[in-house]
Length: 490
Image (tube, rainbow, N blue to C red; front, side, top):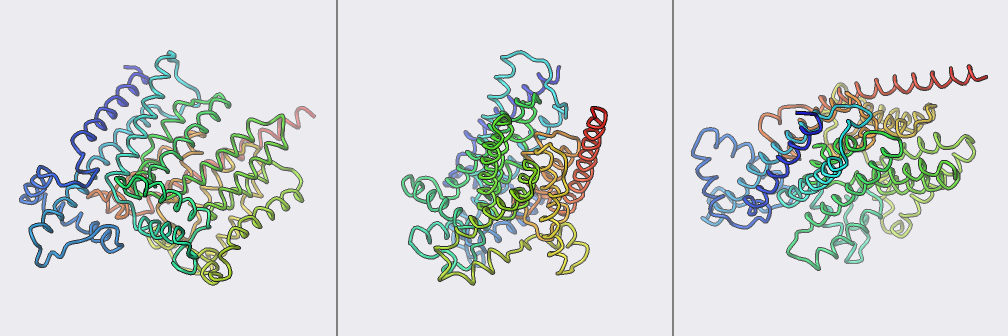
């Protein structure tokens, strides 16, 4: 069986499983009562392994209930209705989690069978079309099924509250006091809430994550176009991004919006790479899109610095454009400043993600508060030392620098290098994808599969360090080769 045929077979198996899940797991996705599901959970909990599974997943249900995402019955003296509800919840997380595990393993198999060759394996036109269709259909189905089956993480509650606050006409910063992002994301949430109110059969979390699925689809389009323009293996690029468990677990299950910023950044990179003969226009679009990415998710401001430093030679122009971007970011807060200035400063400008800081990276080794400011300084200046003209690799190294040295982490940050990594395929990318998938499958804010939950976040950190070190080596080798070529020509 050739590699390409192996890919087709695995993609067809994946698609068949997803179709079967849609048919047999309707109650898991809709939350409707299903006597067979309740009966299956009751039978399962009569066994030792079933009781251990139930106790394990009750921790996750407790967490969701604590954050107000689902209601939790009083199990001290439950009624029959509450018992049935609890069994339904257990069935949803147990069988949904096992399905997510299987889908992730099949997707990893598809990724690893394709390896890291920068050029496509020879295959016919119909095979190319078939594989691309299977990638898009399977990747979209996975995300939408997860969006329907799982509630998301604790931020989903606050996204709902944010949307309601905006629609009520209140100041999101003064009213909520826990909103950590720019107003642009709040306006997006309000727009999605309006859509959900028109089709109430869908939950807000499903509408939100469906929107994020469309964003991933847009990112996939840019990746394919960039890969084809660079004469790279665009099918491998598509597989490594759209069927990457890190990508679909954080879009379909988690429901965070780093992928929106990544989509905007890739849009700018695509324009820049395809307007080489209209350099000024390409740089202008790149600057605009990188600025929009920074506004939607300001923790990736370093990507704007890297883009400007790579695309422009004159430091004065770089400084002026960066200053304009910062002014645009600050201007978005103007309508909310009078009533919410204190909250904007403390919750947005001074925000530091502490979710898994003690379990990941530098903060897991020692806690030295001042190191945060060293890290921020590093983000500001790192991009200025990148002399390689490969803007894709430079942006990728910026994200890997962030994951290597960050002093505050949330699991959604782990998706940052996936799209760009799919354009610069390497064994380190495979290792990072594998390690991060295992961590997400066991994470209490994600699928929480038993056994995997004992893996710490530092398996991701170590793989990120390794990837970052080898990308830096490649970048330096490329830069040295370019200098040697220039000297020979002179």
